[in-house]
Length: 120
Image (tube, rainbow, N blue to C red; front, side, top):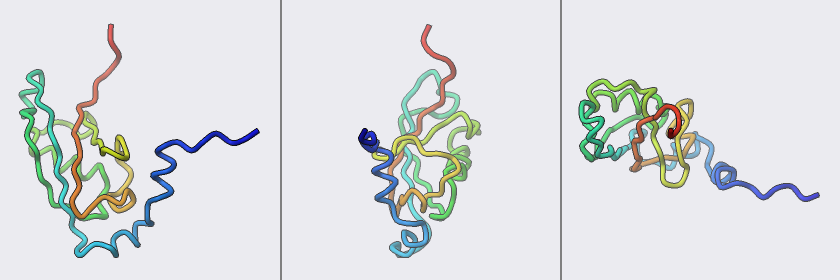
């Protein structure tokens, strides 16, 4: 039997440069991350006004560090209560660095609050 066709994630992972090679393609090791915050009246206490937050951060930083940096703009919302989503790579894992994901020199992400449970 034939192996199953590769998933979109597998295809994207195969196309990525190793982190060291990716960093070498950048002019400087600091990148700009634009994060779109949703407009959500239910989370207005955490500044969910539909704004875009721009962060300058080292390309070797982990996704978790990006979330920690974002906390200051969201009235201290816990980093584990939010997810960052890239339009091609989907939800980004906290343990990966921006360089591992080949994100930069300017990247746009969507911030999505984590929700518990399903519909009732």
